[in-house]
Length: 183
Image (cartoon, rainbow, N blue to C red):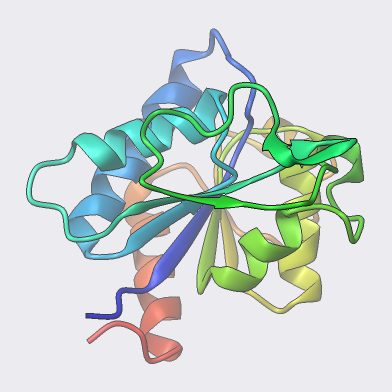
């Protein structure tokens, strides 16, 4: 069975902010119960938190996919700490750029965005912002699950921001149905 792919873009850095961890856990658990595959950049921080929550959900149908960057001068070696231990399908790339260079052609962010039918943004920095901007460029639906736009500095005004998971769920379901990938 072909399941839709929902991308979650988020910080790869560890955070002490439990509200962001809680949101990542909520999204991961919900997506696992929704019958979709989860796609992230395969790293730590909130990417790991959403992957762990998805992976640990009983009776899920989908898989955790991680699109991995490589070491800059060694395309055969993934960056340190990639993939996180919950990634079930690691996609190894020859693409080293991330963070502030996440919009460049040698960034895996293009694959993350183009492979996802819909994208959920959690708190993050320049790398997360670059994926959101790519989603806009490639006309992929994207929604932010945040307390405020300050959780992703530079977030474009046109990106809907929701503070409640129910609103995020409605957005994702509508976009997946519109694309013909949910029954």
